[in-house]
Length: 397
Image (tube, rainbow, N blue to C red):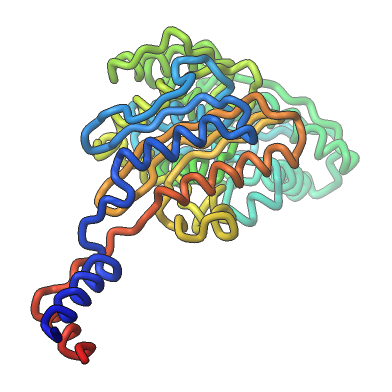
């Protein structure tokens, strides 16, 4: 009798505590969970797909071919385009110099996507501060003149036009009238008299990690444009559209229903299907070329835009969901991977028919998280035979 009890307890400990294979959350159960998710009224008939990452089998889909609003899950396409066409070790420079002309400076750059006019972000994230460059330019001219400078000229190449305009506005607030003049690279270099300072961005790898993890719209847009330029297209929305389609074509993914209006997902006019995003997630899964994209996905309850999710709704899923979030008025999306013991599932949910209120979005996010919590399970190490015998002997009456 004691032996039978020992065997039963051993099975219990190994199966429950030490994660030996279980059928509790087999693909059939995951399929049922997603079938219920697709019918949940809080998600308002979403576009859904669920794929077994190991077998590549589509386990469940509902409206998966429908063209829906992706919100920031579109950044997955920006991420794969950057990974494909930009050197992950590449950095960008922005320099300030005194010009050969009186009361003039030259700013040269590589269109650094990390540069910002926000002093707060520059200090917090170590970004190139264009406000500081403008301030320093004026200070250097006054030091050179030995007198107040109320009028100056700013020549620029390789920074965005909007940034040059922001510099002008900032200096105007300091009672300095500024004439901004765009020049080409050769003209800019010929105007340089005395270098003042040089700022260098983080690597492409680090910046991609940031815009994916924290869903930075400006950084995603700019890096998507840089990827387009590197792929041989225009550095604009048309170029972004072209590079997205090129990457998808190389992955042998149908992009016929894809509508691209930006590189961030911010536009309500973007359209993508859950099937397309699911295929992308499947193609980059365990693919070294796109490891950066997978590694940069937020982790549920731990990092990025998922850092506060699952904690109250599905604590058992913390650390087991890696996914790109997306939110617009009336839209909640999530696309990524969920671990379930020895399996991993690829999922995409696009709920873009919600009422345009914060409460509706919050309810949809919480609902989605709870369903994922029904699947998420850690893979616990199996108890070695020797240790199993020790445990059994210690608890056998």
